[in-house]
Each structure stands twice: as C-alpha cells, then as structure tokens.
Image (tube, rainbow, N blue to C red):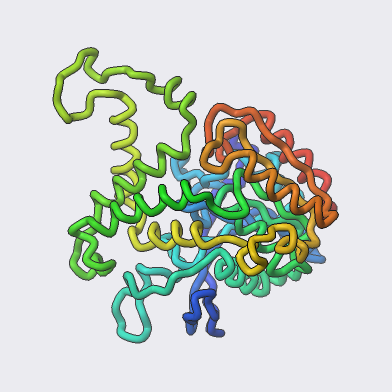
Length: 375
C-alpha cells in the first residue's frame, strides 16, 4: 500500500474510569485507565464505529505510525486505513490496549493505589469477559451505543464473539478470525509450558521482579520461542529456513547452527525486550479460561443462542493452533441458532499468523464483507 492509504501519524489517547469494575474472578478494580487510538471520523449518528480487538501480544496501536518512523506502523496497518479493507473513509475505527496490558492501560506495571507500589503479581487475573466489559465503558465514553462491527483475530476473535454474547444489542456484526470457541487441551498445554518457563526463571521473584530491578528475560525468551513455533506452519518454516546451516557446516556444539534456531532466538530476544512477563502470564490464562459454553454444560449451541449479530468467520488452511475445524464449530452453533453467517476457509501457507498478513484473497473477502455493512 502507498502512503496515501495510511491513516498517517497517530497519537494514543487515555481515559480513566472511576466506577469499580467487577471481574469474573470475583475481584474488583476500584478504577482503571485504558489507552486507545482512533482512526477515521465518527459520523453524526455514531453508527460507523468498529472496534478492533488485539491478540496476545498486540496493543491499541492498530494502524498508522508514530512520528515519521515507518517502523512504528500499527500491527494491522495493512488492513486499516483509507481505501483498505477496513476503510477509514467509511468507518471510525477504535483500537484499545486491554486491561492487564503493558502498553499503558492499567495492568501489572501500574501503581497499586493501596500501597503505592507496582501491582506486579498482585494485579488480579482478567478474562475475555472482563476485557469486553471494560471496552463497553470505552464505547460509552466515546458516545457509541452500538458497534457497526467488532473485529479480531485469535484472542481478538474471542473478544468479538464475547461481545455478541455479553452485549448482543450493542454489536451488529462480529468478525471472528483464526479463532476458536475455546482452547483445546493441546493449546492449554502449550500455554502452560510457556508460563512455566517464566515462573521458573530465577529473576521472576514471584512476579515482583520490577521492584528488584530485573526482568525474567530467560523465561520470556523461552515463552516466546514456544509460542512462535505454534504460530507458523511446518511448510512455512521449511520454506523459510529448511535445514540451512548458518555457517555452511556442522560445528558439533550447542551454539546456534541452524537458521531456524537463529530466528527463534532473535524473536525471543526482541520480545523479552519490550513485553511484560506478568502480562504474558495473564493473557495466556485469559485464553485458557475463555469458554462461552462453560455455563451451559458444554453446549455451544445453547451458549450462542444469545447472539443477535451477523457474523463473518474466517480460518486458514495451515493454522494448526486454531484449526478450521474450530471455526466450523462456531459456524455450526450460529447456524443452529439461525444467525446470518459468512464463512471463509482460506488457503494460506503462513499458519496462525496468516490473519496478520496482507494475503490478497483474505483481504478481498474482508473487504467484500465490510463494504456491505450499512452505516
């Protein structure tokens, strides 16, 4: 995309809420702040607003850049902007950093008003349901009675689905991409191994590492490496790296020899340099806990009976972490409840990360659906 299709330079905004927020765990936050960004213009009837929900390591910075730094482009900049599939000439787009995040919203790095120290591990566990409840407060603040659409991939897709259940009158379209109605046992297992990497790091200090002036870098690196393996497909890893040796020969040691090892260590090091360990623990737990059918005896049909929105559900052929079969479970339950559903199963080699990429077919499908949303 050319620069003419960018939302340009953007500035994060912050809002504070002083009415207590009751959490799913039984805990309560007496007050909290959310950091968010907006793109486009809210129309006179506030009918053109779209909420973009981020995945595990995402943030409020969905599109545009900070200053003139092209490297600071938002994580879904290829999707959001004038003339792009989520067209800011038509829609008023909102991105928010969720509670517990490490990009400015209230979370483990924030000051606990009860003792004047950073929350650290004392920050309460938050869930997808809690995020949606907090996002509803933001919608109220912005004067948005109902979203034209709520859109997200992976953990973001779970939030879009939860919006249709928790606030069925406040969402007209839910776009659930590369997601699932709940995690499989294998997915929970991957998350637990990643958490144990962090929890067993000597620099974790029961979650109060900031007070010690350290970061559990080793644990964060390993957690990210584990996660990153699951985000890519076997074919993509083979195409990118194969069994290529960095030095053209075997050196018979435990240093980096294969290109794929170098790539994973780079990703781990980069992630450990900016992401908070307590936030990572919390985000993976939110993934584990999400299960709309939990209170309905495991019956997803019954759980989704509350939804009134129209749906766009998309999956990717090589996504083995959130496989197409999981999206089809959502589609089946929605059809059982006579909801309007558009479903796309997209052939893309990039695994779970496909939802972040500028795949021509994927973006064309999204564009077609979004163009048909009346505002």
